[in-house]
Image (cartoon, rainbow, N blue to C red; front, top):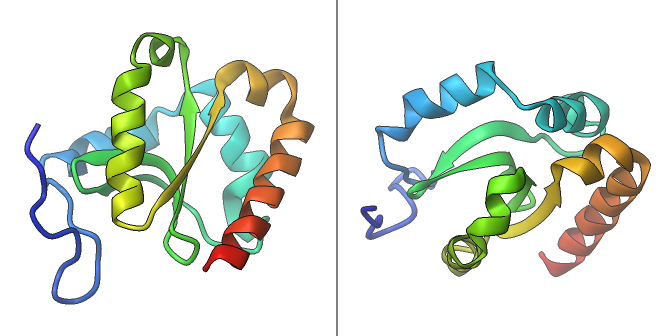
Length: 132
């Protein structure tokens, strides 16, 4: 996959590969069950105090949920992520290098333990506020 040379446009926006735009739109229109739960029960309409975008293209990635104010990426991992941990670590590092912190939850955590996930999201947001 092609890397983006400079992560920020002249207008201060994050660059991304244009071919990701349609895929991100498709993903937004077809969320997984866990993504839908997290969106509606935790992140939608600034329930956290921050605006999150769904399926946001940044660099060569599509971030599941992204807050530009917090530079925070929240990922919902399905079973496939058990087999691609090295890829996810590399992805997290690339995003971290441009100032974006990634936190991950698996589908089961969100579906079966939503209260704990919500509590953890709020703690992560508070920590991120302090970091910035």
